[in-house]
Length: 123
Image (cartoon, rainbow, N blue to C red; front, side, top):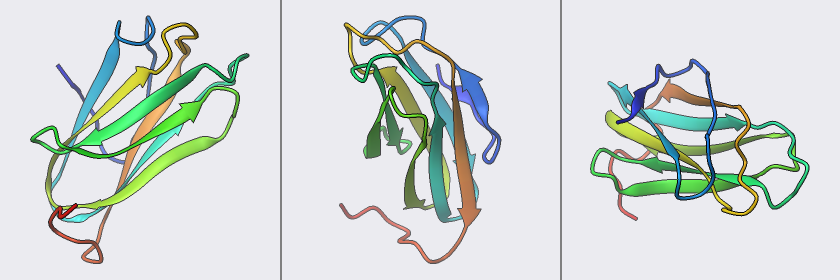
């Protein structure tokens, strides 16, 4: 059950428990090709071992890209890739079972229509 996101609109959320206990899923749809930037804003954690993993999947659940966001940095992390029109999924999980990052985070799928990106995935 993925939460629907509106592109270019941030959403705040959190994970109740750490790795393998809860994963948050989001979905968004774009109606033309372009680029998407998955932006993740995290609160400062006291331990550098606390981190999140963020994944982007296509409608067939093929992983397109991912990143790890360490909790001891207060920067915005992002993934950027070109995508054709369609529905996409984002998964956020706390990536360390011992030092689970469960604080609020903000997530945004920033989309810009463009014909400057590949229209097919070819590895």
